[in-house]
Length: 467
Image 1 (cartoon, one colour):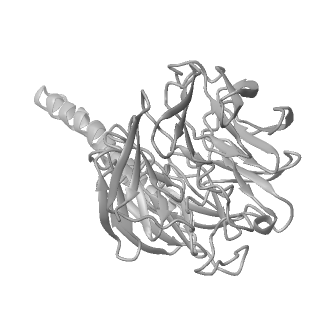
Image 2 (cartoon, rainbow, N blue to C red):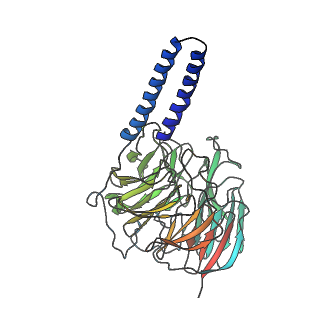
Image 3 (cartoon, rainbow, N blue to C red):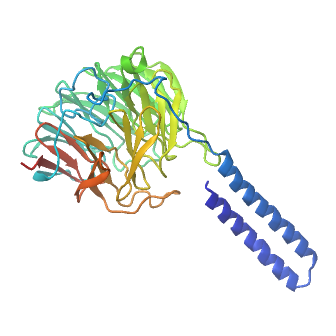
């Protein structure tokens, strides 16, 4: 609840009281004057008191440091959780297991020429992944495609009949995907049946499939395990080769965030899997056993409580970075879950964060791209975006790519910046937009050594840097 709401409520209550008082005064009932004046005074005091409480009891921002659970990266190394460069171009959501959304080994820059366009039949909410000369992507209606990266030709197609709001993952020639319940997948049906499946990436042959509750998370595949989470609030680990259940652990609420990997360097011990819930909780699980290492929460706000973690966590520098729909950006220690810093960013934060060279980048619903110091949380700069930024940005060769979602947030309690859907590239050195594309809505680009792949509303574009 905001100060404006307090004032509006106070006015709407006080005005009828004053009106009734005037009517009673004219009809000859003097005692009503005292009653209504007293009532108006009480309502006014409650309104002012509520506004004062909101202003003074809301939480303050928390300033971080670079001495506690922080591993600084040099400006020449990636902020990934892997010890060596990732061999495949963009094999999973966020590029690497730590979901850094930054591939430092690719150097495409605009202007781009369009080589091909692929019609995905319906909305593409999450970006494709790229491996072995192929793109893999699912549309909202559950059609899953394998596309030849060089030509945009369809190689194979799986019409699952189940909704999809997730990216797949490709490891060792196998593509893993997770699905929600049958289309149209109403949000209130939390008990709907989904599934996790493994296909041969070259042929589309099914290797295994496991029925689960509805899943909205992008699979995390690392060290022989496939990690996903469902709408019932359960996190699963399956054997990547067989689909056998390795462990499952229940959390406190529905999960629409995706799991992220924190390796031994990040945790200071053994690997963990981290994920956020709709109750505003952030969990870390032992990657091998599923035991809960720690549980932290977003800030509890007067009048609204905790809001939910839709964003997928980003693990880098010994920290877990995650935005919340309360409009704040949070950094927790990957080892202990301690809240290291918290900063008010915008009206809503749905985007996962980019982590690169000790800087964290996010987008907001009120139309900003913001850069934070990874250690302290200090806002380094912010640039205006042409509209709501809903999906995670992508960083490549000094340019931050993001999409704007026309119509998103227009019915929310807080402000969503009106604007058209499109895709943009912002120079992180000058903070200026240097390129735009007329399609896009949720997710911007992924890439390989040859070209850039842009996810439009229902189209995938193959783009190449101009010679």
